[in-house]
Length: 235
Image: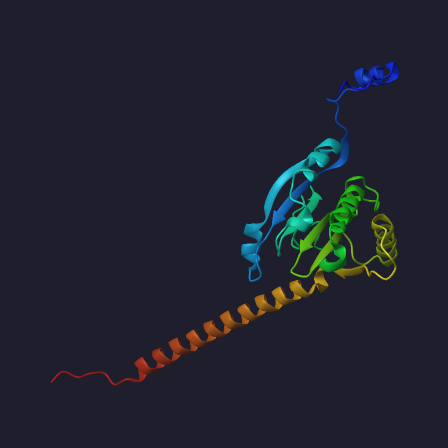
């Protein structure tokens, strides 16, 4: 079958489009991936976190998004993170330390393939700087678990209630979420996982201190016993 004839206007338009031109983003963003498993320690999680690519143009974003595995094809415990270049997707990073995250949970049996669209709309809002001002946004995360997906938006501050409420409303509008789907905000300092990690670290410190005290007491007892022992006399 012969190709359909194209109008002079279309031909002229095709000739004037420069496909080599790229459109820069306001910020450079880094895509990360990890799948640490259920029993990963903080150290193994950090070691498992892999930097995939830096994205600094609209074209690079679409090239990446269209070629990485879709969210609904990832295995349980998998996570994608898209953060501003120079910010690691960790609580300990200076940019995240005083901030928090907005979290939205989607049951797998209800979300289906739509989770890919939710993730795409969030990323477009993030790289398009549509959600907040004053460089407030740090990054976005999508987490895959056995029975649900969780989308999170990380921000730099956690104590400005007016700003938090504004971003929450923007997030709901961006994802076109029904009012019965909750958006929860958690300061990183209040995160259950971080509290558990802090308690575990404190427990380790206490155990180490107790071990040191026991060893010191044992050494003192041995020294006292040696001093008290009668000296041997030659026959």
